[in-house]
Image (cartoon, rainbow, N blue to C red):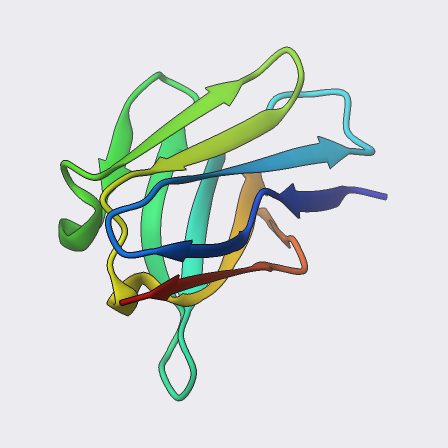
Amino acid sequence: QVQLVESGGGSVQAGGSLRLTCAASGIEFSFNVMGWYRQAPGKQRELVALSISSGSSEYADFAKGRFTISRDNAKNTVSLQMNSLKPEDTAVYYCNAIFILRNYWGQGTQVTVSS
């Protein structure tokens, strides 16, 4: 059974940095897509960044220039380096992975940015 486990969330002051990591288990192949989404209280879940198996990446506009996604296909991990964090970045961050047509989610890790 495929499992995604996030780590690295926490509390930080505005302007600070955090690095989230997601480790996948239960699969022998690399995911087609690995990425991060977030959901703030009272809001819908939204895309943060994606890493495609071809090597390309996509970012939400709010993440461009501040966040960097990276992945290690050999280890089936994906990380999100978040710099210059803002209070509006406060949310639960979820790891997402897609293999063929199956979509997998982690349980989420809380990121809280105080002003």
